Length: 457
Image 1 (tube, one colour):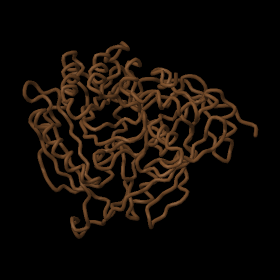
Image 2 (cartoon, helix red, strand yellow; image 1 turned 90 degrees about the vertical axis):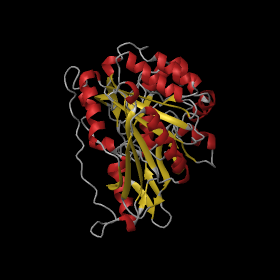
Image 3 (cartoon, rainbow, N blue to C red; image 1 turned 180 degrees about the vertical axis):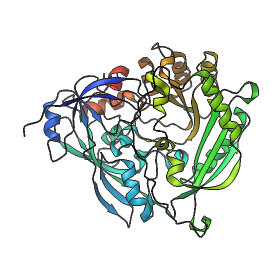
Image 4 (cartoon, helix red, strand yellow; image 1 turned 135 degrees about the vertical axis):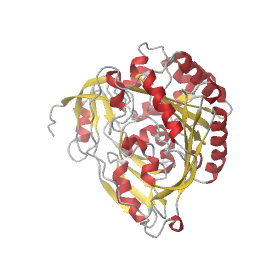
């Protein structure tokens, strides 16, 4: 087959901190995918481009856009197993299966990522203590290796290759298709209980209590928003939301068990000029208003998709950060290392970098994936204007706090981490590299993230 020349596009991650002119190929499996792989010496695999930093941006070589591989191949309504191509977005799966009484066990803050991206990042939801991460519900996957061969991987068939791909940031090959085990559900609604807290200690206590319940119930979701602009004892006050699946008995007679999917237009909004709307004053004012306007409440009925995917109503969020874009620094630390959470917040506050958004979630046990992010304990995510991080080492003290506490940063969100600390944060990195080299005999796979953090050496 004669391949067309790659087209050139300016690409960025969701955070818009980096824009890169990229040569892009977008073949289909039947239309030259293998030939495209064999024709290029260096390839970055890209799905929907929703990772925040440079995980789906090229270091060198071309970008292989996989969004044409978007078919749902089969769905067994009896056992809830769906086989889907990796370029399909989670929204398409949910549209097809939720009205039939099945749901994805794990959904991150957006439905607009691809299945391949969910596997490569081993995404997690707000129910991790009970449900684990996305990769734990993948039954098998088909992987295109750099030599053009296709292999099927599972926890029982080449488990090293399977778990190196789960959370492997697209660096083991092109995920072509996967089988995913869905979960039976009676309704498309959840019940939300909300608690407004008055201090960080109160927030942490509430989240610890929820973690114990989450471990017993994979359908129980929890997240806390923190007001880190409040002064004195109010620092870390917040809003703690708990969601759990509503049964048909919980619904008023006029409410259908499965709400109609809301059609939300996907729009790429232009970044606002200069610093955008994110200044220290506007962030502080918005945080105070959010806390004061919220109230504790119980048994509020919310559509499942609205509760789990708040980012899909926030198209303008990255644009609001101006031309410097948005950096989300997300890390996880063990349960006993709350001092690291407090230390990070104190560091940011004393340097005038109080985040625009701060969220806290509970984590349970992780997967066997050497580069999978979750570890038992806490995960904190802070959204920062990219212009505040004008020097590469601005957050180096934070990196050291996280690593010193036995924690790690989330590779799918990263844009700024000290590469020397990655082997400390991910102690199984040498094991992953051995498997990656076996799956990538032609040494084709790369990315801006891989090169910046020296993941492949």
